Length: 170
Image (tube, rainbow, N blue to C red; front, side, top):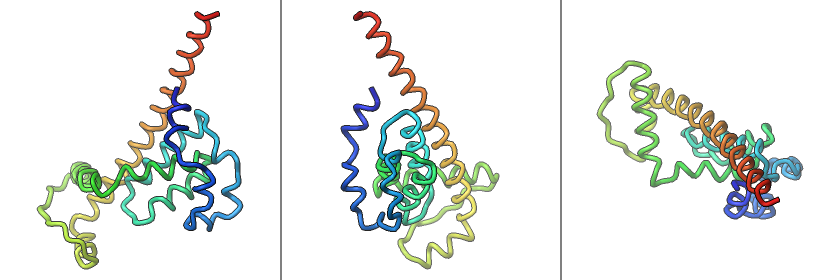
């Protein structure tokens, strides 16, 4: 069942509540709905976490936490899912976003060499930036919709399967 699997993988909610970066949310973190594992909160958390994972900002976890609190999604899960874009996967994911953006805009892909500097980022915003940002938004929306409906369906299927098992046992 998804709930048991997710529960094993999730960090303790006391650890998350005591995180110094999340203290700006204050008493909002004490809402018990942010910590429950049910179909709706988990599906929302997957949608929020994957949406924020595709947004190229340095504070993805804070963004995910903010949206999870507003949407009443499972907070630890939403914050954890942004790590899908980690230093190992980020080049592939963000290049894919750039390719999607150029395809949507109908512009040719430009050759570029990545440099880790503010000057390169500022210069790139005018050349590859529009296609990259559009691709990130489109991929974020697609990933969040697929995650929401996929988790919702998987959860329903799992519950129905458990019910059938119980019926055969009785």
